[in-house]
Amino acid sequence: MGLPRFAMGATLLLLASMTGRVAANDLATMLKFTSKQKDVDYEIPKPEQLAKCKVEVERVGKNVGWVVIGPEGQVLRRFYDTDGDNRVDQWRYFQHGLEVYRDIDTNQDDKADQFRWLNMGGSRWGIDRNNDYRIDEWKTLSAAEASREAIQAITTGDVAAMQTLMITQEDLRELGVTPSVAAKILDGSSNIPLAMKSVMTKSKVLTAKSNWIRFDAQMPGSIPADDGKAKTDLQVYENAMVVVEPGPALVQIGEMIRVGEVWKLTQVPLPVEGDKITVAGGVLMQPLLAGTTEASLPASPQVEKLVKALQELDQKQPQLGAATPAELTAYNNRRADMLLELSSLAEGKEEKEQFLKQCADGIASAVQTASFPQGLDRLLKLEVDVRKTGPVSAVPYITYRRMQAKYSVDMNTAEEGKRDKIQKDFMASLAEFTEKYPQAEDTPDAMWTIATAEEFSNRMKEATEWYQKLARNTSGSPAVAKGAGALRRLELKGKPFAIAGKDLKGNPVSSAAYRGRGPLLVVFWATWCDPFKADLPQLRALHQQYQNRGFEIIGVCLDVPLGPPAAHGKQIQDFMTTYKMTWPEIIETAGLDSPAAVQYGVFSLPTMILVSERGEVLSRNSSVTELKTVLPQLLDKK
Image (cartoon, rainbow, N blue to C red):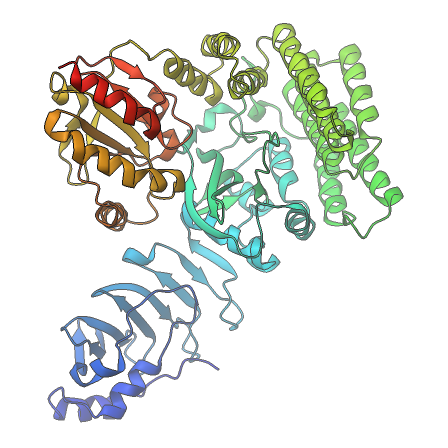
């Protein structure tokens, strides 16, 4: 049923004659209207408050209609005629006096066909094309909101909703993305239903009960048109992540591309399962070879025809669990053959290399999903053939994916007790890869994998050496900044420490202000971090016990905003109030990619750094248990 449209004229005269006083049944009628989208949080008065509510006639410019006023004088609803036909065409809903959502009828058919979230409600703007109150396309959608919509779509199995979020061939054509790059981007959305089913069937992290908590990504990057990948400037998130609960757990959203006012996904969300290795990064932020651009290599008619055939093949991709092994093998072989043919037809070296990389990606992915057992042999053959025929610059890329695919197969088929050796052999192969291909695009990721594995095993000397190698890498990969930060973190003890920022009110907070007063604990935290919540009672007790002797705490909040700055600030302030956090707080807004986190290599929370009264680091990874012993000793020496 559509939204009933009020006839305005006679009723407005009646309401006006009553000088704003409305019968109870008129107020009840107004409050019966509800938002056509479910995920809207708006104010609903309690039954005992209805006597203090009222309905008034309102005219604002050309808009005329009713306003529902709550018991404290706040606006609850506005129902407007905005086109002068004496019938309501906008239904607006409020929370704490601010409009958070509106239903809009733009074609005078008595049904809302557009849905807007506003202020604290967000910035989404959806359009319904067929009068079923489902959003068929987005007019405005932020990256964070797109990630939330994607998690909801995949956990509910809503394929249609997921399709509205995915990049399309038309989108890429509108942006002027070159054909070979577009083909590779579309590879991640070739079979959305199968990808969604595969994730929900296999994942232990993402379930029907999972809820989106926050968007976690570095700042978006701008790719200029003269970079050779598109005819227009592009805005891209290279590898966005989200945090979901229960867990908390990470889900990889992957590369996101802005199309007009809408952020689009290039792949179905992929949960990070335990220590499973995933390939970070997207297509658009991969470097082109010096002296070449794709824009100078237009696709031939044969290439365009084959790209279209490849897309049609992907649309008919056999489904895991339903297709026979022979059908899956035939599909994967045919797909690889087509990509190799595209590579041979490509007119430029860069384009040839991209099709080869796409071929390697597809085979490796199929191997890791156990849908192409013969894929390892095919990857090895591809590697051998490209070594002979070129372009040899693609060899490291293919080799790295062959190594990852083999590691995945070996770990999934290993007998009990043999995984440690497989892990050790894989680390050795990664080390060999970094030596053989020091300039390869995957070398920083290989170094990062080795370094973190060494640190997790408490082999700090080896971890430090690998972080040092990674920090010296000149590729500009995000992994390099992480490596430099981790190295700095490991080497903090005994060195001067400084951190500064602003609190929720914009006031400066600096560790330098506490120098000479006593020991200082700097705590990196986030509202979603359960271990931090568990530590807070003891941290609060230590602060109260020793503050009068000079012990202080500075927090560094690494929450990512979920909405407007005011709402974000309120969320943090409410958390601090609930947990009685009385010490100063530096507020960062880019999560673990915030400058303060990267500067000191913080990638797990909470991280506590204990600093002496002289400003030198006493412990780079303190704990509540350690503080109970160390603090009395430090303060007794004063």
